Length: 140
Image (tube, rainbow, N blue to C red; front, side, top):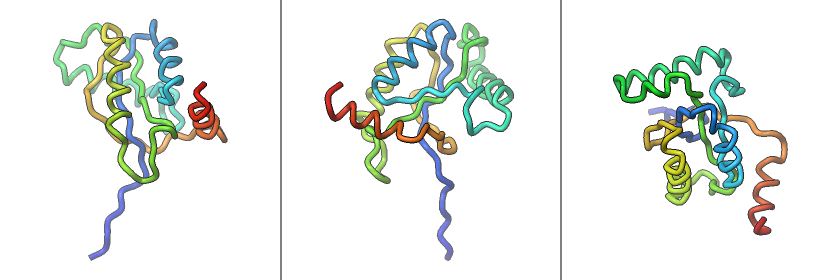
């Protein structure tokens, strides 16, 4: 029987973020080697605005009015940088815990499900992972 292989993907949290805190959240996540990608401008989306609309609508509809305050919020994917990866091993619990802790700090300005999904790999600028890993190892 031929082996079925899953297409390459990366684990991400899908989050609705209040645009007023988006820059602050992104900076905090960057310092922890967590990557925030607005769905609207994600390089893996052929039609980013449409995908963002669909992601937002799906999340809002699942909550039947409980998340209505987030109807104009920005849908984002939050992924994990090189310092959280160990080859082909699954993400560590420390990676999950760190992400959920940060999102809890922004509880009034984010809406999310506490689970990860998969998206096509999001490309990074050349050397970005190496730079973060070097800063982390040096204690910066």
